Amino acid sequence: MRIYNTLTRKKEEFIPRQPGKVAIYVCGPTTYNYIHLGNARPIVFFDTVRRYFKYRGFNVLYAQNFTDIDDKIINRAREEGDDPLALADRYIGEYFKDADALNVLRADIHPKVSGHITEIIELVGTLVDKDFAYMVDGDVYYNVRKYAGYGKLSGRTLEDMQAGARVEVDARKNDPMDFALWKSTKPGEPAWDSPWGEGRPGWHIECSAMALKYLGINFDIHGGGFDLIFPHHENEIAQAEAATGQPFARYWMHNGFITINREKMSKSLGNFFLVRDILSKFAPEVVRFYLLGTHYRSPLDFDYEKLAAAQKGLERIKTSLRLLDEALEGRESGDEARPDLALDSRLEEILLEFEKAMDDDFNTALAIGMMFNLAREVNSYLQKNDFPGLAEKIASLQKARQMFVRFNCVLGIFKTSAGGNILREDKDMEKERLVEDLIDLIIEIRQTARQNKDWPTADRLRDRLKELGIALEDTPDGVRWKRQG
RNA sequence: GGCGACAUAGCCAAGUGGUAAGGCAGAGGACUGCAAAUCCUUUAUCCCCCGGUUCAAAUCCGGGUGUCGCCUCCA
Image (cartoon, rainbow, N blue to C red; front, side, top):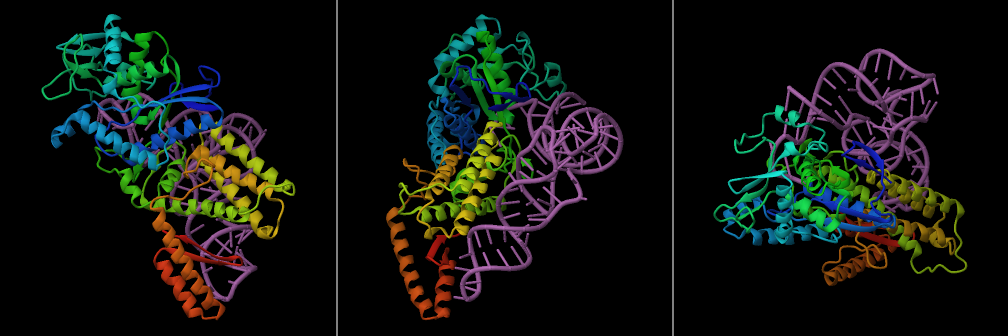
């Protein structure tokens, strides 16, 4: 497998710290609001990375943190008259609602800052002891001039950064780029005792402390959005490597932004779309499919038209799955089941291409292309062979179905049951069943009309159903229906 | 001011030296009572522009134009 490493600016062969194991840390959200689509991209992408490692047989240790102590949370809590930690907790709950909907698997560990104050204080203490940090009025700052590697991730020198002169000058700091490890308490803020007085952690120290605690030194992959390269990840490296004297993480992966009219989606610009608002208009599988349709390092421009186009594409894959299921329904693979050699070798090719795509820096866009190729092979085969008439040769079709499931295991687009069946949204199943029965009834009536060549009635029923979002399809084997829009 | 990324058909989007995946939209055909779905065929002589390297470049190098990002909270 090859991974683009921000640290070296090139694709490198992935060599795990320990054979067969991979430890991944991804920077999670600061929980003071619902997540927007820009937040969802890394969540979905790195979930896919993790799934692929598992698919490749790795033992995966996956950690994603929550920042539950932060200026923005404190401000928000003040506005709402709430307790900051309670507010953060509430939004962690909301986060899981959105992430679950997008079929994001739970991380092995979801550490929170508030639960790791001891580790953080210990790490800050080490940095102070080793003279990488200094105290001013109860604040503790990291001294960037003491760490020779500062800037290696973002590819800048301290001189480069200061040329911008956008850093506010704080005379108390040794260098304008020095950043807070520990902030002294202010009235009304959550605070903890420390050797430097009451206070709370700075933003960057938490990830160094928690990643070191759970994943250890020199762990495999650290991920997050491009905007975290500097200063967040640069600072994480400076803290961890100064404290341990060892490399922090081996591979740094950063996803590109979601844009709106080619401009970064961000809270400060106010051009963001909340995941739950999008999910009120489109199925979660469409959103996930859309997010994975572009390579993770490229920007992805969002608007509802593009989501609609993705929905139509996904529809094609679902149709193929449905046709396949219909063809296989009631058939068991027995002794008479022979593979179709031509189809088999095509399937094999597609599988290899899929894995090759994923091996090459997680090229999910190409991988999805392979899903379309698979759909075309299946559809074309069923068409050519007039399949429901053929009792044998189902072995290859079963293999094709298995491939859909395997691809889905990695991409996580459809929710699947334990048996690998791809399920539809299973809310309100009872109502659902009634609706289905009613539609079947209407279809029966329409079939009678058709037998009587009463086309106006038949067409009217079909048109009315269409208005209600139910599309009918007449086929030689009977009538099929599906939801539309 | 410093650093960096990107520019592929009407739209979205892979492809980083060997002669342009895939999807959406469009066109023609098969199938159909008409549709839908599906299948088949078709849609970029060419990958922002100009130079260079090479037997060979969308892909490498130099220059230009444009768009975006980071340098401040941000996924």
